[in-house]
Image (cartoon, rainbow, N blue to C red; front, side, top):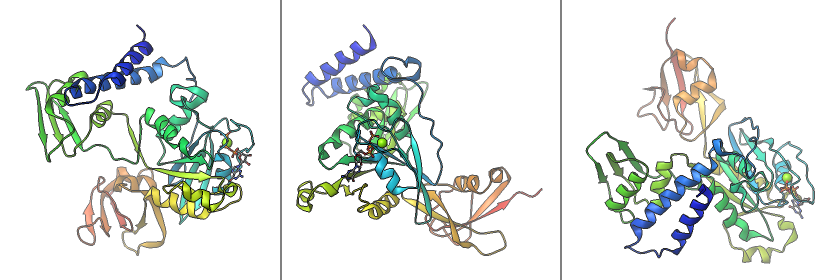
Length: 364
Ligand SMILES: Nc1nc2c(ncn2[C@@H]2O[C@H](COP(=O)(O)OP(=O)(O)OP(=O)(O)O)[C@@H](O)[C@H]2O)c(=O)[nH]1
Ligand SMILES: [Mg+2]
């Protein structure tokens, strides 16, 4: 039996199995088997069949990268042109854009790279219409902007499914669980809080499925079977998303109200609400401003360095100069991440918004 048939068989069984306390364990094992098979099916060594080919050649630039994902003809290229200086081809027919077109949006001192991509259709994750390559670009983004046509707002779920299918977890954090493998002693499980979704037997069963028979597990969150499998698969991307509804110039405000909230309405073509969208993109990216202070002088408060949330002193050094991390002795920090003004910090120190950083280099 081929991998595809095996996958189909397992998925059919999963759908047939009623969900209850008695079948929980069985379902967990089935899900783990399915996740493993899916990974095998999309591994690069098994390309070919259904649109493998080369990935898009995308050079990251700017302080952050945002990708535009949506069905064909929803106005992704029009929006790229409205947000940036790029000139991506626009046309009334589907699949106008055939490759990855970059542009830079400057907003609040940040340079944000926006990537326009071909449209995705249902089945993209299986490779339809170069879909897998498009989705692969999204895996490396800092924000996924899902663009919907005002007349097809309910396509949202389908697009989210495609992104999920390629291992992207939208708007969620990595599960709070650590798994340390060991050579013997079986599996011990500890919890820092009461959990309801996973009992010990299921955890052990799923771990065994991944070839882990000894080790320590610590749960710090009430995670699900799927989340445990995500951790074991070890290739998931946790990326925020923003839903944008385009072509609102074609409808009345009353119609828009019936759609509810949770999206940013724009008209890329008529340039309506584009400034608000820029604000939303910027806000979602959670960028931080870091000021540089020379060892002896005053901090430069005019030109902050724009960095991702969670950036460390090492990231800061890398941005200042290629060799700075090598010559690094210690840094001094003023601001929210410092316990006291001028605190000494190492390369792994996490910076906070509006911190001032001064790097002291080794002598010689
Ligand atoms: N009325 C209206 N039409 C728009 C708007 N934005 C884009 N369009 C039109 O929609 C059509 C498709 O626009 P594109 O920007 O090429 O769409 P796309 O999503 O990049 O399409 P593909 O590259 O084929 O996936 C064009 O005819 C645009 O002029 C808008 O805000 N309002
Ligand atoms: Mg396009």
